[in-house]
Length: 117
Image (cartoon, rainbow, N blue to C red; front, side):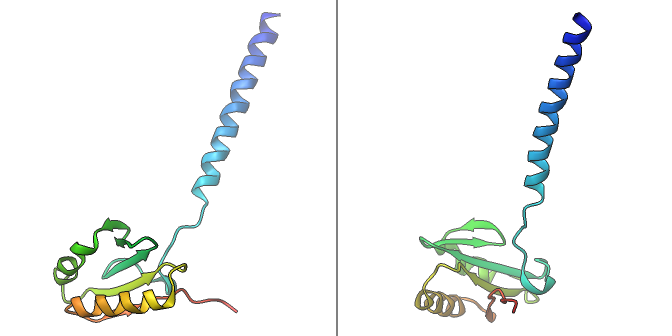
């Protein structure tokens, strides 16, 4: 009887461990946001505007007040790309792009995800 109980406990632990491992595997397979066209983040500064006036620079949160200094501190070879959230109204995207271009010493390019046919 003890052999059967030990086997049942071992099987239960193995089953629970397998289920936990499947959850980790599923989490690892989720797609990650990457720039379109296979472009790497190196050599480019990606400025993302999210709803509620939240800003990110290469994935790190940044305040609107720090943007001018951040843009001015970039090396001359850095491309500056603006990626607005899809939920932002077109007028707000246009105003934000104009503001970024006004405070940046280099051109700011609007980067929109391309839709496949």
